[in-house]
Length: 106
Image 1: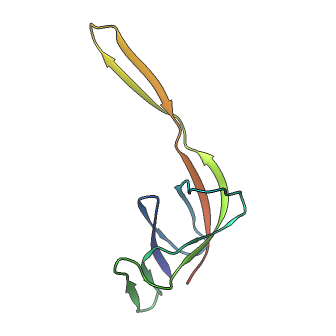
Image 2: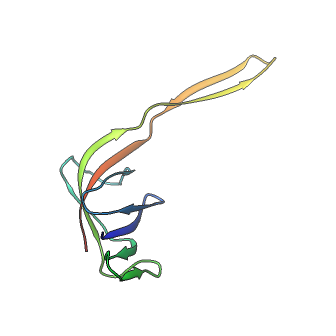
Image 3: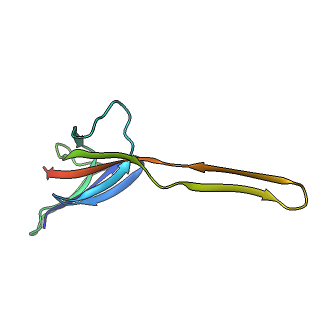
């Protein structure tokens, strides 16, 4: 089974063709259905015997994907509270993400 490890958004993802992965929102204008290419591949395995490691990246290798969904995660409530001092603050945060479908690993 062929798989690759690539880096984007400060995180690393282990993927194979056909996987759906939620990655951090990428800069620039993107629409659902756009083709994305991740060229910062750290490791590749061909499934038989060869494992390629980068230093830090493998030159010429890339992971091709299709942007399938642009959305935001569920709300995370952030609460700051200090007792006996009438201090209470509450706010929420929704982190944006891209859901991508991995098409091929080269």
